[in-house]
Image (cartoon, rainbow, N blue to C red):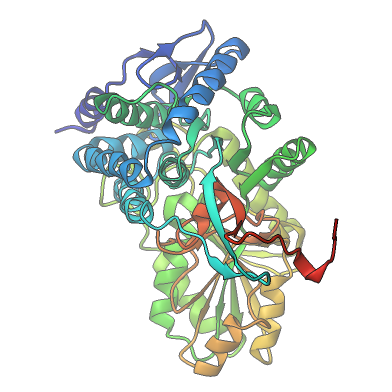
Length: 514
């Protein structure tokens, strides 16, 4: 089967036409005259188009979602979990075509596309179990004959704004948990990957319809930042979950805060691996290379900085140069290739600017970058993964470079110096240390260690598991998605006190006799 045939087959399996309505409350779809055309960074070809959501359509979606919430919240949580289970099973059946679409529309490797769909399946499994564990605490009251406890109730509409680099998984992380919590969802996918959003909505809509559930539990809107702005300003949407740049996140946070809404933010990362003198060099190279070039460096958890002890610096540098020489760049649907394209020409421009900037600040390129040309790279989005020797103080190093550019930094003295370098950037998402020294590992994980939301030992920065809460500190936004108790953000907490006596004692021993 040719790559073109694979793509056509995937689109057919996912019920995606040449032109598609882009606004949905489930089984019902509406279409405006304005369109978004999706072009693949793999070959530059137009895949299909999706209509954008008008203000009037958006308001209708919100109204439908509000009505659906009133019914969905009354469905027992384990039954809501059963619906999510069915959705996960449907994803299993469609894993290959959806993974193909993710790879082709976004540009990540086919294996990464399949891996992203597997993340969706995994969060569904997690959510199903969680649907029977939405429990609070029972506490002893200071007042005799009283019982006190806390419980969690559905929050309402959850607005989800996702980014192009994980065009399906991030939505699933949010929606699967929101659904079992009794919430309904309105999703605005990235305008760079609208077809992935379309495919997911169709899959979810089919499952909800088959179970006789109302319109509005899973909703889709499409468009640019103006649609996202409508979501953030709407007082009927108590929670906005937004994934993207720090700049975007600050705008979302400010807008939502003005109306006293809640924000769940997953923003930029500027992730580092510390390589101690006690590191396993082979393991270090594998972790660093995948972290730096996987998804063409377009993961929020991508490895941007490698902080290497001076005693092994040259050895690690040499091993990395050798490893980069083995990388194969090309069509991500060809599983022999390691690196696919960047998402679009703007991303290529930012990549080139980063390489220019690091040199202008005094850095040295040791693995040359550049844009690839030829028939196999006709989209113009294929670039060479590059390595630069730099200083942590460089402005370009302090900012996230959303491309396959790895900065090598040297440290001397004790581990505390490396930790200080790692923590000196504004972002605080993912971090790692390569060491076989127990004391170093424990220091890195201590309160005096990494200031990131994710801190790993002897694995890279990239690739998070479903069971743990995903997110980071500082300019990363502070939000947590996926595992652990991340479900609590999608619910409202209520404290209850019950008096089962004929008396009414007041708290704190206060007397108020009448």
